[in-house]
Image (cartoon, rainbow, N blue to C red; front, side, top):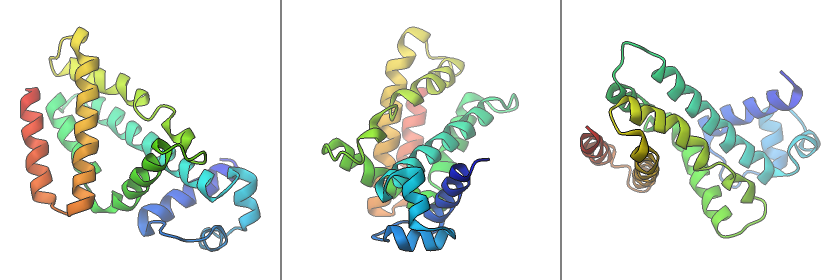
Length: 181
């Protein structure tokens, strides 16, 4: 791994465990065992680092979905449920809060967050379409359906972060999964 990759992995671990809040780049660098100059060198700014953290978490989530989809002992519905369970794990909440914070900033046109929008939906469409097809959705309607599933999932995650109502959000997710059967 490169120095950049090592710093990014450390930042992902820190954000997942502690969140970000208003921590300065210098304080974050100290937490990561490096200097703020190294973070600037590799990521351009605090905000650039945070965008890369979100992208790394998204890549990790897609890799987890691929692992679940490769398990021949799980039905597509079981794969979806296990993936949902991973997403609602309280250990993921700090990274998910960061996702929504930066997503909102990107949608407001904030330049530092705009790169986050590249692939924020499209990177998920192929793996989710494959999962939907395996679950029996006709291929010609699967892509539109998984776009809806992605929107529902993100909406429920936002609900969870806003309310902390794990049981209510789980029930809603289960109801949505039943509509897919």
